[in-house]
Structure formats: structure tokens, C-alpha cells
Image (cartoon, rainbow, N blue to C red; front, side):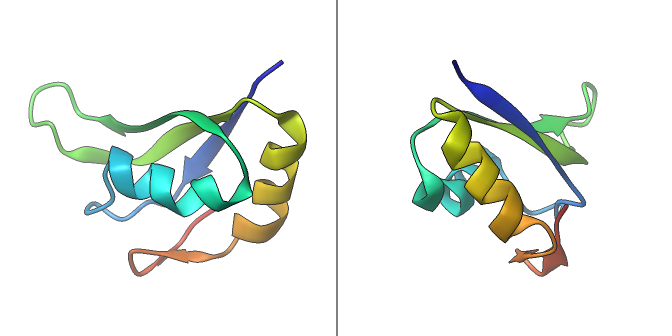
Length: 75
């Protein structure tokens, strides 16, 4: 069973690839998506990362909450 994480306080410069890269060290990421504004395509400052293994998601929560990504402290 997979587990999806909400990732907030993202930099406007963080894209799908950067988000995936930051979380892949914890396990198999099946999806990583930064949510964008419909009209402008600009990041809304949050996204979602889905892990195939719930224990990998739990490790990611423990280590990435408050970590720096593209100059911002994410949660």
C-alpha cells in the first residue's frame, strides 16, 4: 500500500523533478507533483510525494520536516 505525503512551504523554483530528487533517498517514489496555478503555471508552494513503501514515507517525514530545499524550510 502506498503513502502520499503533503509537502508545504516549497520554493517557487522547486519543480516536480527537484521534489522527487529530494525524497528518492528514502525509498521508491512513485509520484512527485508540485501543484501549480491553472492560469499562470506558477507553483502554489506545495506538492505531494507518493512512496510505494509506507515505512519509507515515515522516514522521509522524520528527516525532511524542517529541512532546507531550494533555500526554503519545508514541512
